[in-house]
Image 1 (tube, one colour):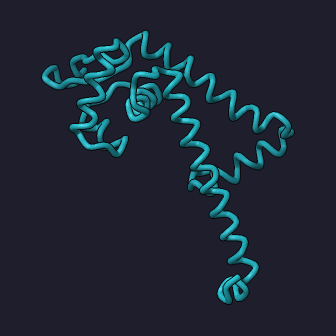
Image 2: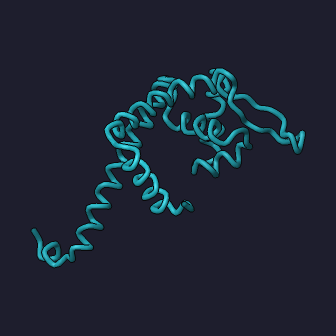
Image 3: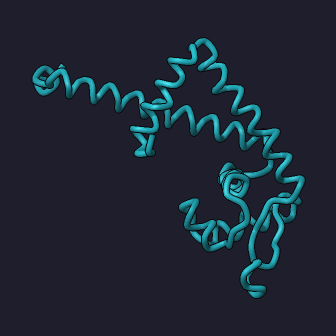
Length: 152
């Protein structure tokens, strides 16, 4: 151990342990997202499923907004959307507010495939919390809301 580690306060050590657990959560969540993407369609990159997942959660949107919301560049979104369209998961439709604008949305096939893939992901999380009682689960949810800055 180095000397700096020995000088850490109990609070600093707790914060480091929290960081380790957050990193573990992010890593396992990413791995689970990749697995879920492969269940959705093993021929697609996980980034394509990220687009599908966003459309499933938030509904039709423009390609520009989709790129911004998913933190992808427009050319990547365009390429992935073309693949998703070709496979019948995504369709283009006229914007309800501006007929010149184009919105992207899931097809029925895309929606059903997403639901099927997410069931697998939900099961993995359910297994992790299945032994918790309701009070523990509520407490965990409240702590996550507070940590994420969501109003309780």
